[in-house]
Length: 579
Image (cartoon, rainbow, N blue to C red; front, side, top):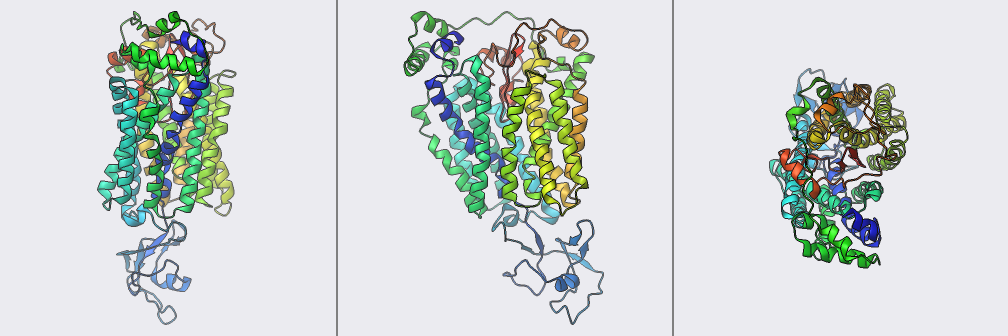
């Protein structure tokens, strides 16, 4: 296949057209994954006082607050969840000397910014505030399940069929969320939505990469990030003009309908067809690609592309337990797991916390997406010049220090808090990209898939915990930044214990992996290992099926993070990822 792609052009007109079509769904996926920032926006609230009716408005005079609502010293403001038992509307004629404090029976919400919110409709405040975090955590678990489920199905049933099935499911569940009146049903639909989004994104991303030659896959990986960032901007724009969370959910879901015609436009993956020995169907696609690219291809080149090569003879495959069987490999595995946990937790924690930084929630959200672009450019420029380990440690350390610095910034300097938080987001985005590359290069070939797949599963745990860490900000606003900053700095320091992989022949056997950081291995003659990959790094590449089955489905496609793809073979790796 690689010879055929080199002949017709590794990223010619046909591949560019298919890449554009397959990347457009990423905009919808991005909006849906980050929509909870606006759908479940936290709004100010207070108790509805005994003399107020259902039309009561949120603002109260300071005089009334003083006699009706107790002071919350931890937040430096009047309580949002309690009131005095004998408060009165006539503040001048009644001085409240009661020490009896009661919890709110009914709430009055501030709708000056968000007219509606899932938080308002399902009353996810005060004693039920943890339910708000649960919605997003369940969504993250759904993403994990979807990565495994749809990844496996796409290998068995075909990329195109699974992509379209996940797309239809996403549209149905997305619209259902907007209509459901019950919290438990809504949360369950969020779980299904998270799973379906993984099916849409991962399979489309795989199909795009399977069309591209090895020297253009890094470029395609970088370009794909622009579509995710476009989703960031589009979500903020829609949220700004659509103030009803239910209609906002509809607006973010309906564009998925535009991709239903892909059934007649997008062909099945030629690599998957070849792996399934459906060579005549694959031939039609390859010939069309050559014709669109205006290249003449000999019958021999086509036959070589259609040839189903026998699996390479390999040593006994490793399994999950082999990651912990030997001390050096075990220490590196635990170190990498911790780095994945921290990167995912901090990334999603910052992405979902933009509304709580002060200032405009919409502007903060846009900035949070914009800083990802320079993060990926920096990663692309540094990996083959400086290496993997030092940039990883530097980004995580710098990002962690920036987040810790926010603790000492006065509240009235909100712009400085936002600047430091966005610096932290830029750094964690870059480190998340690097950790994929480093992980794939540290684990030996026989356990590389299971190693990267297991690491991604650990990352999901971090992402699922992030909403609960943000919830701690209700008690003291600096707590989330303290936790994220401390974890980032710790992970950055620990990453210095990992071996550098730039320019080195990567480990293949368990013995190589155990000795990788103890003694130097032969340096790789390839001078640009990141770009000159020998193998398509798709999460579900057909060439990896035999290895995936051997590893009991502990493979990259089934556990890979929602915006990433990894590529390895013969001791090399090529990765461009986003979180």
